[in-house]
Length: 185
Length: 169
Image 1 (cartoon, chains in turn green, blue):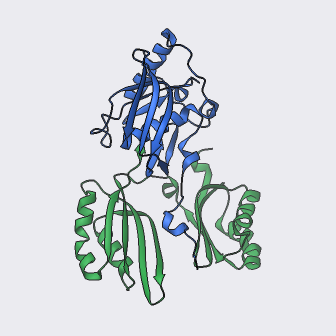
Image 2 (image 1 turned 135 degrees about the vertical axis):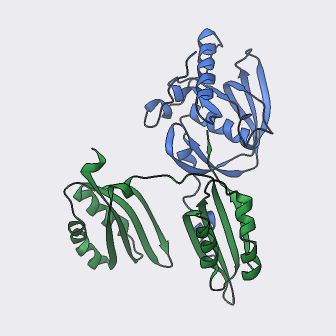
Image 3 (image 1 turned 120 degrees about the horizontal axis):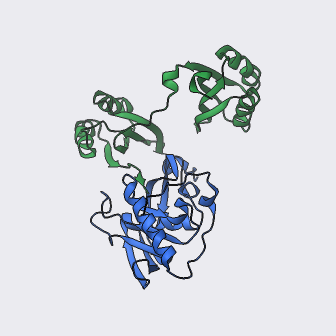
């Protein structure tokens, strides 16, 4: 099957967590003959969220896809949305360059995510994964953020660490950066 | 000897438990040469195990001396026949990828130091070395191939471990 003969969608399914969301969603996709090409699903504060890249042989439309999800969405209280991807977008490109992990943590305060990610964006550092979590005691909440990012050519892990020095001081947070580029064996 | 094509999963040989080598003869020496050639050919490759080129024998070659992670701590080219880990210590997670499982990587926990006993493919003598760091990881990864184990079987977490923890109240 050539890539021109299939249509790709970015599908998201979000709702209050309960058993059966994944089975319900993938059951519909299976019956429709959709391929799940990439997906990530997780629970966040009692909500379960699925993001899937799916494909289906042409002709197939987004409205048909969403129509198939209407009943499940109503039954399970899910918000389902889809975006049709261009053939160009559907062509997967792994991020190039060194992959690094940033650990950011400190007393909770507004702006931690924004300030750090803005700094990364301004240098074209591509975030590939990001998780945040509020942890710690009630009266003393600690904010934890983990970022995986691909560094563009010419930017080193040490440089990333140095460029975040201002934010460390200003927000009084700990930031460590280390390379996690996969080793090929 | 020509470099061989690296087999990729789902080739069935990659999930086989390999046979013990009974004698280091011409055929085994030829296999070792093929493995070395194949390793040298692969960009950035630091090891190849016999099943990766379709041979179900307990033979692997490893050389991390040319890699960024292993260049300061290694035993050079290792030709391992019937390798066995006799002791291990420490644990560390490293993100691994494998030529037999392209386009995917995962965090794998390995011992940071291993003591390995093997027949040296160079002269047939019994040898024991203690490897650490990246070389230890490479040895464990290649030895896993001899038991039909891929790094996919050892991925420790799909997410940062921190978020896997439950609340203990």
